[in-house]
Amino acid sequence: MNHQQTELKKDLKIRHITMISLGGIIGAGLFVGSGSLINVAGPASIFSYVFAGLLVVLVMRMLGEMSIVNPTSGSFATYAREGLGPWAGYTIGWLYWFFWVIVIAVEAIGGANIIQYWFPSLPSWSISLALTFLLTLTNLYSVKSFGEFEYWFSLIKVVSIALFLILGGAIIFGLIPGVHSPGTTNLLHRGGFMPNGISSIFMGIAVVMFSFMGSEIVAIAAGETSHPEKAITVATNSVIYRIIIFYLGSILVLVTILPWDSHTLLKNPFVSVLNVLNIPAAGQIMNFIVLTAVLSCLNSGLYTSSRMLFAMGQNGDAPRAFSKVNKKGVPVYAILGCTAISYISVIFNYLSPDKIFLFLVNASGGVALLVYLVIAFSQLRLRRKYEKENPGALKIKMWLFPYLTYATILVITTIFIMMPFIDSLRAQFYLTALIAVFVVCSFFVGKNGRSTLLVKDKKKQII
Image (cartoon, rainbow, N blue to C red; front, side, top):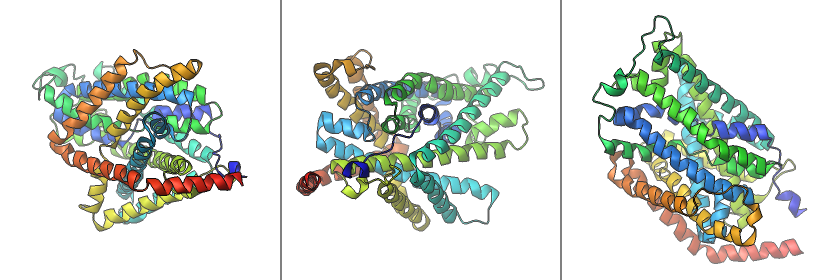
């Protein structure tokens, strides 16, 4: 009976996992946020995406190595617990959960702002709550329901980027009658390829890293598919071309077609490219695509945060009620717990957008780097353990181990240390560090209580 109450249902299909992995990194940050980075680094911003993308490829390779040995919804929190100790699993689990429940609120607010473009009379807070409520229902119904919604959201994003790349390429190569090709004018003749120096590229890397957050969701979702090995292999092997095609391809098109120093054009860079083609209702089309990206991120955030809370409930790092599932294998209490926090965050945005809500958003800003750092350290420890105990399970291996793992740790640590020296990231660094210290301290303060609860639970299960 206990087994049925705490077992997730493996209803995600390979097509769900494949599309989640394809669309997972395509968020509103690419469609809207890329313009601000191009304004800072110019055409050389492509290098920021190259370096950040390389780091994500390496981290995903490490995560794939561990996930194929032990596919679980706890993902890297479980591996951190196994490789670095209970404190690491507890800390990174809660930080990752905190990141995503804040993202849910941010995306709900972003979605509301887009919908207000069409329905200006509707209050933003009510739309935010309605979007969160509707996608909560899809997550509560079944994991297959989540998978279907995410499949179609991701498909729209992938098709949109593919069409954008085709249209952008046609402009660049002068294949569209009546539309002038910019050639290399915007790349080389507005202060050069690197107008603001090499420092702007490194500043951009820290910003871009946050755009790639979501790549790791597929490792969590693999715990709810009946073919985890195939799902993880597909996702891990495809991450390279996903980043090259979707991100690097898109940024290359943008910096070639649009002048990097035009603040007006780069507020909505994708819309600006469509306007070059005189496409009617370009803004409307792009708003719909961005709304899809926002809803996809909201949907994924609800799923990911609830699965992390579910796994922590199983480990005793969160209340055990969160590890319970219904007859469809859905962790209802975990989903409702995440939704409740997001509702509260939306209310904070309505009551105190410049204080409480801004604090929450900034405090979650550096979590991506901490998650990637913990994945690297965990892989460093667990690889040696797997090689001794079960070398045959290592179907995916990190390249040039341990040298590339050490290099990844060094680079991520350097980026994190750079954050307080970048004006736009300074607040995120200090607040993320503050929250991280708070979570670590809470582990040691509540350690005895959690141990007692785990012992009681084990006795109940034996009885």
